[in-house]
Image (cartoon, rainbow, N blue to C red; front, side):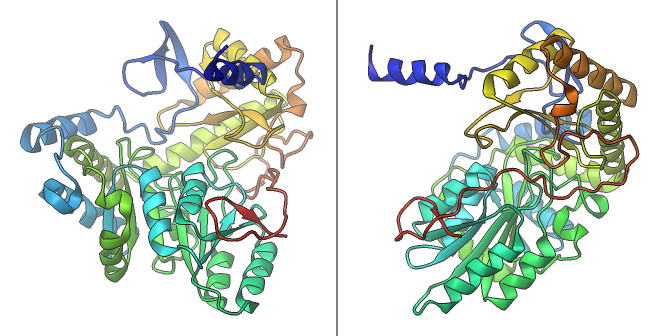
Amino acid sequence: MSELEQRLAEIERLGLGRRFRLVSGPQGPHVVLEGKPVLLLCSNNYLGLADHPKVREAAAEAAMQWGVGAGASRLVSGTMTIHRRLEERLAAFEGSEACLLFGSGYLANLGVIGALAGPGDTIFSDALNHASIIDGCRASRAEVVVYRHCDCDHLERCLRRDADRTGSGRRVVVTDSVFSMDGDVAPLAQIVELARTYDARVIVDEAHATGALGEGGRGAIAQAGLQGEVDVLIGTLGKALGSYGAYACASEQMVRYLVNAARPLIFSTAPSPPSVGGALAALDLLEEGPERVERLHEAAHALRGGLAQEGFAVEQSDMHIVPLVVGESRAAVGLCEAALGHGVFAQAIRPPTVPAGTSRLRLATMATHTTVELRQAAQALGAAARELGLDPRALGSERAGSEPLSPGSGAGPTGSGASPADPGSRSAPKPRLARVA
């Protein structure tokens, strides 16, 4: 058996094997999955704009006017007028001075983090940050302090310890605003206040908040009244805005610096004109119809209420990401397959995406889901769980615990309580995460 065969066998033994599932047709509330019609309950197409006719038409028109590909990096000949138009629109939407497009959210996080921290500097990163943030921290070669999830007391201790050191370099705090696997919201106001106190820059990734939180879908930063208070806001075009790509909003000075220092921007082909054109149309639709955000919240309430009726331990809130934490990887995969048998596609999420022992179905609503079909989906998930001998009362968000909440309770979108990284000791600068108590 070759080394790769051994590695693949070990992955399968641990119940962590992965494969692609083929979807026929566009991303909508219903899709054909490997020949079977199902309700899609795990897409990030939160506002249902990925298959909106106006978004499709705009992407096609952009391809006809500017071509399919940009042909070069942004700093060579790849920056087109359509790129500048979207950057200006996004800056106005986010209430910032300037904006810079990237090819993807992953590239944006790698580029921004690497530009603002390096050897001799310290990054403070939430324990449940997205993999792209983690990899950006690693690639920067800065020291990385992982603070407990949404724990500002722990963050302050870490910042104070670093400030007391002699010769410490730059400090950067980086966090998701909405955490993609739990749907909880970072305490942004406290983080910004601590950053001011300890002379640290703040980077916030709004990937799962743009289009879903705040007035008109402007995100968690706007919802917290912090527009202009964060050094860099990173957003995505590939979720609520239904396209592909990402952006960084910041001051004009910061954007000029990123143009010169963000390596993934400098050394990647510019975003394709069709994706930019589609995003422009999606932004138009969001600004013209902010009620789409309310419909997303209503869909979240409907799903959560239906799950509570089935006995699942879910919190009642308007957050569009709903974790059903199962625990063991194979059990999560089994529940996913059983749900498919009932016509619901909710992908199983396993390590390393989530901590060991917290494998789950990560449910996500769309503004285009109806209340009836979401209630039916909840019933299907309840039936699937019981077929496997699983008690719905033991499945749900970790923070909700084993006690189901009745529909209409007032619990808000706060921390999920997912296990943070184990605290340890600071290491010398190297491309890995150091952990501090």
